[in-house]
Image (tube, rainbow, N blue to C red):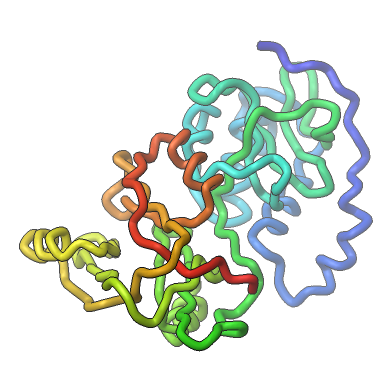
Length: 297
């Protein structure tokens, strides 16, 4: 499918760059945007980057230069990375894709304010463009989604326990803990803090935490049978992590294609996240346990 010819747009992000420069350090998304802007005007082509770029080579090169992250080439490989995100909730550095899943033909880097940077097609150059002029079909988020907050229990009520959710981008793993100190320690060691995943009760059904020393994975389950079976297989039981109770379901999903070092399971109360992971090939394991509520912090 051919890419429509669109005049390059003005880079509106310059209007908020002064705010970015005033910070002590750039976020990963800002680093990606800053790196991508260096190649505006570079011709489309198959010469060695950064002399020329195809759309997927531009993304691959920018991620390597800005964050030292090695991505595969070809859009159909890149579209499998990270987590799918809604087009109305994009963040700096998200990847935008055109075409059906499994058959994408174009990719771009989101730079904020409804704009992206891409390498369009032969005869054109790397450019700024607006989503309103040519909208992608879906988006994927590769980099960690740190909300900028430090782990805290502000707003936690009597009889409740906050379950903090963190993400390790380099390992592709999520971690869930009701222990504030553990969440704070992981944040200090480089994990991205994604906030409170759900609010658990302080009493109720047991949710067991297990650890696989061979690949660093954790798994959480209310099933004592599953716990014992995993222990027999070499996992280590780390006791009761929190409790199940309430009326709000926490969903468990399984990734059959996870690499040995990556998450094979994830847990969420967000039905949109659940459904998008299923579309991306994850398998639903149903409701893992129940929570009291979603935290507002």
